[in-house]
Amino acid sequence: MSVHIVLHEPEIPGNTGNIARTCAGTGTYLHLIHPLGFSTEDRMLKRAGCDYWPNVLITHHDSLDAFLVGKNREDLFFVETTGSAPYTTFDYRDPERDYFFVFGKETVGLPASIADEYPDRCLRLPQNNHVRSHNLSNAAAIVVYEALRQQSFPGLT
Image 1 (cartoon, rainbow, N blue to C red):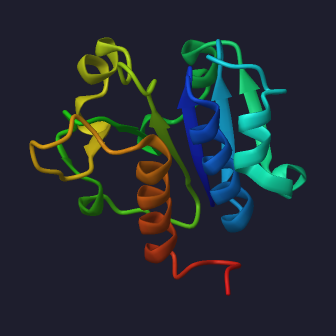
Image 2: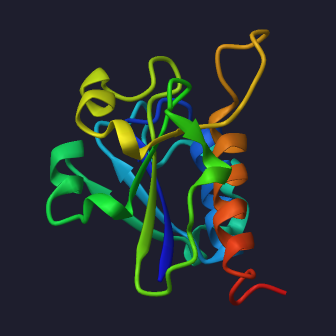
């Protein structure tokens, strides 16, 4: 069983760097779906990830469709402000499964077709109406730590 953060066409290098640091510190896999809104050589990306990049389990994908090939629908969770249920209502404890938390672009989120195709797999982080959404790196950390909490923080001290 593994936890995965999937970033669909991320635009802000600092967010991706912060998420990479969370992945390095939790043993969570990071998937980057291209095109990226920055170069992986970007100094802000490297600064945010500090010297943890060698410890990040990272995979690059050419497109969302390429990422989805062969994935079990029940392993996918799409994080959107319009999600059908709060992230805490899902069960992430099955030791035989992978958990892929897919996040959209900072400016527009995931493609609208995702909510149509996977309505039961869309989750949200509760919030008030003072913001459009949570910061991407904060949202990723919140969801990852909920999954890891349900698993009793495997491999973490």
